[in-house]
Length: 136
Image (cartoon, rainbow, N blue to C red):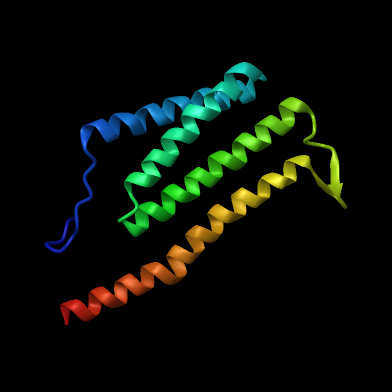
């Protein structure tokens, strides 16, 4: 139930349509990956990632949205790299010890995770303290 102090985050209709197209492109990319339809999978990386970056850019001033949207950009990047590594065949090539080509996708995955950890462990508590001080 809404409280009187709850903030409302509204999305203008053109942005909402862009986000919906983003989901469509993302699904097409992953269907291409699942079905090993290489041209579809690779082609859909570009609109999926581009829209994710645009959505992120749009939310630069809203810390919670920015953190989550940045994590999504890194997730799509990692996911796309992983897909390409399988398509090209270097996903199982040893890189270092037991790490293979696909394990390099951990770098953007972990970057997204670190952004969210920072937001939840540092930024959000800081915002809560500032709000508590402002209302007291």
